[in-house]
Length: 386
Image (cartoon, rainbow, N blue to C red):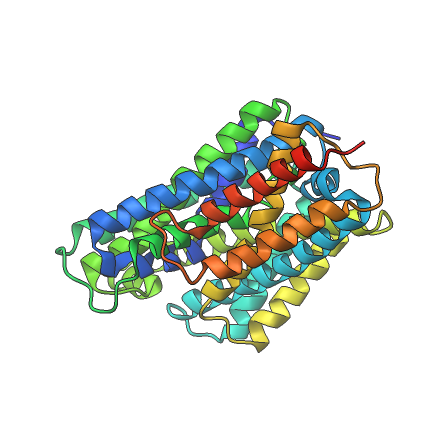
């Protein structure tokens, strides 16, 4: 298997971070004001990216894909449960990203929502056909264009308006932190799919998470700044007012393609964990086609509940993996299913859903992961395995 360089990993995760979904999520922080909103974004990303780094390091050190590393804690059949759930959430993400991208582009060039869904989906299929290790020059050109155009967008937002109070009910600081944690958390079941192929796994993981974390914070701030400084949460409309035209089209389409490509590609890799007979590339293409159909047929304007559902499933999962790998040094890859860890995961899932009704200053994902990991360690101490 061809190995990826540290630089290639950085490019991959730069593309993942430049996301319309993250900009749109950033607009929700505006009622908090720039100071408190920025603090919540930074704190949330520190928490989420720390977990993302540990998840990526497991894959980098073992050379296993994300869902194969899950089998180290939950056994073969237990791992297949999470692989199936991961494929489902990635199909959902693929549809949501295509929908958001087409909706934004449609605000600039009104030729029909379904047309832009097909255009964006077609480009994602092209990225998949080229493959993660062969993107090379194509990826460099795309990332350079995104960097330049996103800087222009920042200039438009932060130099053309005055600071204002945004009307609306401000969420609590803890809820804002949770919304900032949600995006890096959504990459937990994916990151090992890319760090496992790195020439220098530890360094590639650190660079991947650092690049993603910084760029993701930047996207959140763009969304929040757009709402605060221009009074407008529709990024496409801001671009039109600024006269960006074709540049806006390039930003919206490329950012959607480079992020959604990772979702579809990882869905294929996760499917291989379900059956060795499945081809990851062909599954990724099928997921993209389903995502195109979903984006055309169904409305997908509010994704907050979807983000929280992902968190409730995968936060306790990775907490158990971290406890097993870094503290207990345990590998259950060879067993059929680890009933105890599955029971602990269920407890963590229910705990997460319960904590959603509390208001903690650091959000409830961190609390859930700490308590789930502690439960895992306590179970090992009280009921040691033979």
